[in-house]
Length: 132
Image 1 (cartoon, one colour):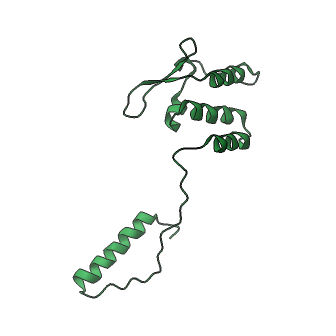
Image 2 (image 1 turned 60 degrees about the vertical axis):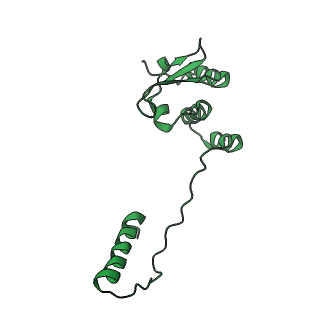
Image 3 (image 1 turned 45 degrees about the vertical axis):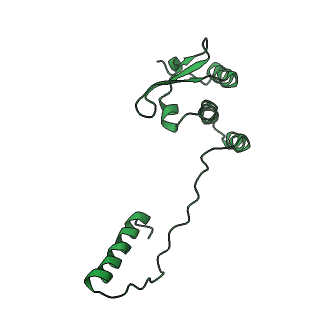
């Protein structure tokens, strides 16, 4: 089953079940050979403690800043990837999120801790923020 997705296997199984019941008119005997994969889903909301552990476990500083920014602003991954320096309005304390869900723009508050972290990151000698 490693070569096929679970949804493909399920469709094949349902096809066989239909074939047995409606074409062969035989009772379907579930072989019990195929079991759904056990998946571990991430929680919808990450707690502050879990977020701290994630930040601490991230060794690349730019990734750590990225994860912190996503978490503190409540952004989706794609929104964070599209974020540019010019989208941050420190004077008004907000961030312009472009092409958010539904292709709509929105503004989110800029926490002081996030602003301070981004300033320190951009002032580091090895960091050069992209021009917008």
